[in-house]
Length: 115
Length: 119
Image (cartoon, rainbow over all chains, first blue to last red; front, side, top):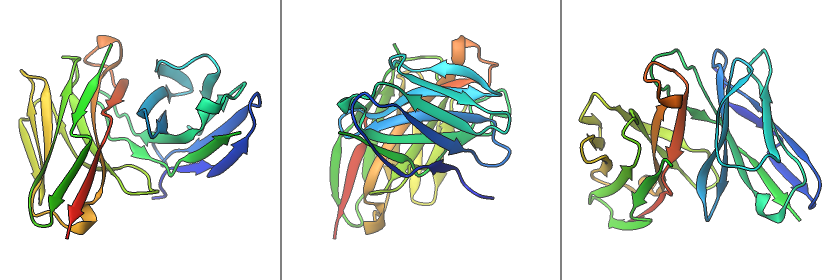
């Protein structure tokens, strides 16, 4: 079974631009979560999507948004990029069969650099 | 708000010795505690997890203990080897909205421990 994939793997943008990152979960997984990883802040939870609905949200500004499609693929968008948005963005998928938290499997991440 | 504290931030042990990483969490509703290992330039990989109805779980050289009363859990690696060198993250997950029957959950990660194994 193929693992979680993310595209693109690397991205360079300038301040003020917007960016869209994509995540394809493991086949059969319906939950996709997004995280921002920086050396100083560790792994910060952005949001989680399940059945095309955002179920959970972290403490990030409204510039960070996402969506999920009917095939469970998810996209994350960051508008009006700031230098501080430079980070590794990881998505993780889980089966979420119900009743208890499921194991999350991470993708390789998208390294975003904002100049 | 929810918080997971992880200590130490860096740890260096002699090959063959044991390593222990400790985490505490703030939300008593947390019921799932995974541990991830992240090697340089790679994605986090689950190495072991424990649920709140279990006090200890072991998988070969790795073990995790959970004390729900004190709200802390620990990772123990015995007979460390060079390939154990990595950053380790603990995490705590609780049902969204406090609904224990909800499959929705929010995972809060600790700040990570950089483990180095000295040959």
